[in-house]
Image (cartoon, rainbow over all chains, first blue to last red; front, side):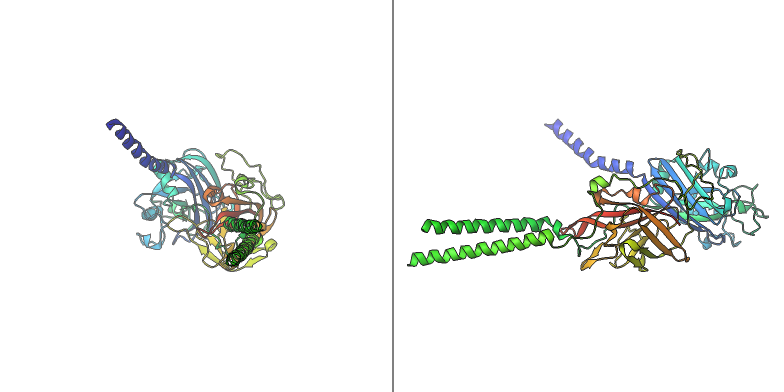
Length: 254
Length: 238
């Protein structure tokens, strides 16, 4: 008796917990899209989209962008930090006041690197500045596709929750067709800051859930109204029954 | 006398009741059967057509890419030799023309996903909404536009969407003065409670695509909603 009650309690508890467990296990499945736009202050005339499909802790990334400095390596990453604002940096993030935003100044907005969108090899944050493995934007355009990228569970979750940010780096501030200048990168003192400054940025927004409520019924197919058909049928049957009853009474009398 | 009169009265009453009931029933049946055909819908049941995948080919349009280096697409996802076909820069849609079903409007409104994660329909039944956080029409990925099939008083902007078939064209005018032209690959109907979210909103094909969404199927008068969505799949041809 006592044992069975205990079992029931356990079973009930499991039934309550199970849906929670299942939903969190599947929570990291989904799609996200980032509309890439010029980073504030950095003057890039470009745009693009980056789409990420998340399946567990594996992601597939497709990305197309244009308006970048041609034939130059463009580091591209997914950024995230729990404490970040989960957005692209604004002019107010220019802490140095030099009139441009470098990658560190964007940190409070988008956080650190969590995925390096390299063309080959490692995709971890360690490859964040692996300039020989990033797209070089022939004609100023990037066409990037890579699957089977493994990420940490919290990163997968951040992507499907719409909290991660795609950033493509590399800005030709002085418009001389190459990365140069006296200011060195905040990330790698061997590189000019032009090579690592954020060029295009977009928050990976979670795809909508389910369908769209696009009808009010004013032109709905009334033929599909089963209720009306049933009512009509019932009325006809009732009429037949009433008629038969009346007829029987009549014949009985005669 | 009195008995006969009572019987006569009851008989008349019963006969009248039978006629009235028969008439009511007939009216209900006629209205129920042929009162209103409802909006056009793609052929087939939701369950059977939901398995019909849109065209997944990544082949560029032969006519457009005759001069470019048309390399056969690699099936291996690790190879970032991405050939997305034609891709346009970002620009907001400002008009939609679908000649086949006489849609031609500049009444476009932005749609923003709410806290519930659902893409809302436009509030105005005559307008076409576009999903602002998705790709713009012409950019890589599926650009999503949605409009009502009907309002409380009759047909709305996408009433005839279900008439479209593969090969029909959709033109989207954009605020940079360009026009994104799409050709339709598939027109499918899905139960809303079995909506293929990833196939509709995710990048399944690696090219610039379009999704046009409206309602279809039976209208559930208890909820005030149609039970299905009609989704038109297309890709950019220029």
